[in-house]
Amino acid sequence: QKEVEQNSGPLSVPEGAIASLNCTYSDRGSQSFFWYRQYSGKSPELIMSIYSNGDKEDGRFTAQLNKASQYVSLLIRDSQPSDSATYLCAATSTSGTYKYIFGTGTRLKVLA
Amino acid sequence: SAVISQKPSRDICQRGTSLTIQCQVDSQVTMMFWYRQQPGQSLTLIATANQGSEATYESGFVIDKFPISRPNLTFSTLTVSNMSPEDSSIYLCSVAGTGTGELFFGEGSRLTVL
Image 1 (tube, rainbow over the protein chains, first blue to last red):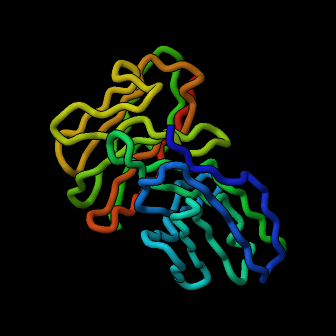
Image 2: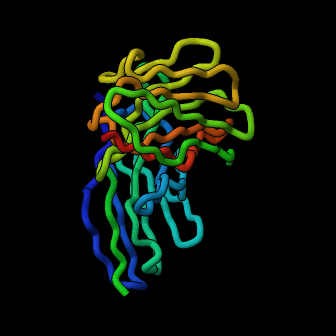
């Protein structure tokens, strides 16, 4: 079974700091990677997608992909209390039908 | 991104009954998926809803328990059959955008089985 792994946290950072969230995946054939934010009681919301090695920046968010190490990360700069949520990493799977595999999520707490 | 409407948003059901969840998308999409999220857990893929053919189920999920319909490219239903308290969960419809392959979710259906 292909997997996506994340540290469950909670990861606590002070307001204004950089939050670093990490994810590893086991399917070497995975081509697409996504970060979702999920507030309690809400459905996941897409915040970043990344498809090639390197960095991709969008506002305060930077996604990093290293396919050789099978590693994806998300950096949140100038963290705000409103960023407190669970962050889910997902990767597409190449085994069997095309599908999206999710990690267990990392709970982030930004302390005011 | 697609606008995805799910209903019901929540329901409380009795053991042994069945509930059908509807998912309506505002544009035609090829790939549509049904996920389950149990309390405090991550997302588990139930099945891929295929238009015009039988759904593709993941290990641990069977058609008799979770029948899925996909009559066209904008609509799907998931039925949770013969429910037990273990089926209490959030059920999420999701669609993949054409081109980017980004996955978007409906607001979810929170099901409580007594």
